[in-house]
Amino acid sequence: MRNRLFVTLVLLIFISCNTSKKDERLLGEWHSMNYSDTNELRFYQDSIILYEMGRKFFGDWNSKNSNINVTLLNPDTKLIIDEFEIEYKFNKDSSLVINASDTISEYPLLINVKNRFQHLQKMLDLKIDLPHSENSLESSGEGRFNQEIYIGFKDGVLKAKVGDKFVVLDKKTVRKVVFYFRAEHAENDLEHLKYIIVADKNTPEYRLDTLKTNLRNIGVKNILRVYKNDSVDYQNINWYGDNIWYGLLE
Image (tube, rainbow, N blue to C red; front, side):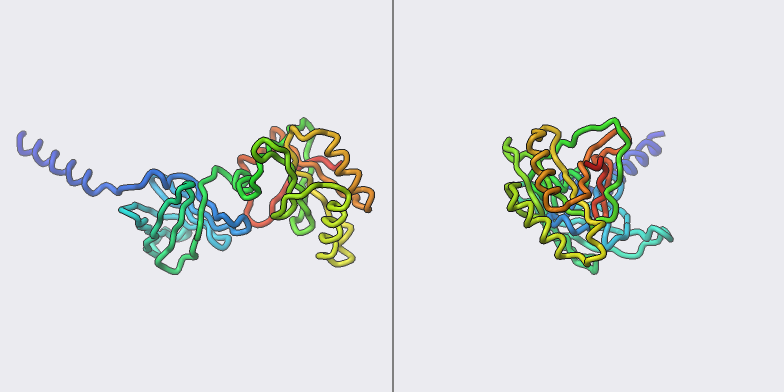
């Protein structure tokens, strides 16, 4: 009986000593600071998932000191196809800097977010709480025909952003936005262009009405105001490639 107990204790100690260690600060979804880069790392207690170049990989991982050891599994054959090491460190703002030692693409600077919509807000440096609609929502369609105009809050102040620039949405700026966007497309594509208003629910209606009037005065016909409803929740949408919005035509 004593021998059996001794063997059990030895086995338990052996297992605990060999249990993979994981830096719990890594747990969660990590996205590139470059929003157009869809590479992504997801760390879980029992696995790692990597999205790279539109493909999904998964495997096992553990960490020691400043290194992450990954055993990557092929999602089709379940066979080990690669093992590599990732060197990492955290910045003061909790962003993650990593460098892979193998052929996997480098993920330079990553931030921990819950979903791509939160990722987008961080990249925009805006907080946008979308309005809710009881109506059925229409898809924005093919992303290359969409010009987003974002309106949200930064440090409690309502601001607008187009592309990577904060703007004042007066007549002159709206005209520039439309003309530049039209210039990027062929003549026969112009009728498909759509202007997507992604605005916080607390945006004053008069500001939205002024924006829409300025757009219509220069010939814009397709204006989509983005909403969420019981079927569309941007917290659960993971875009890869173009953003697909849902809303109501104005």
